Length: 58
Image 1 (cartoon, rainbow, N blue to C red):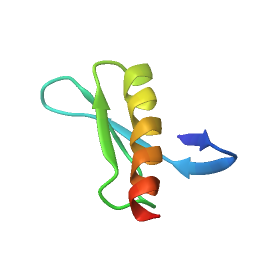
Image 2 (image 1 turned 90 degrees about the vertical axis):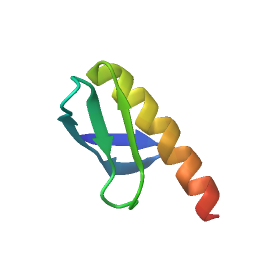
Image 3 (image 1 turned 30 degrees about the vertical axis):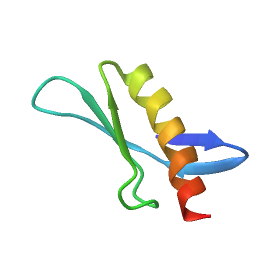
């Protein structure tokens, strides 16, 4: 899946974990991982995680 944030596209992998949550991982940003109870929640959370991850890198 491709997520757009501030005109930048990031590939996001979504996959279920053993507890039923959806894990969202950004391979281009090592360590940038989030989760949610639903696919929509996982995508919302990973967008925030991307923003925070990039802020820390700056």
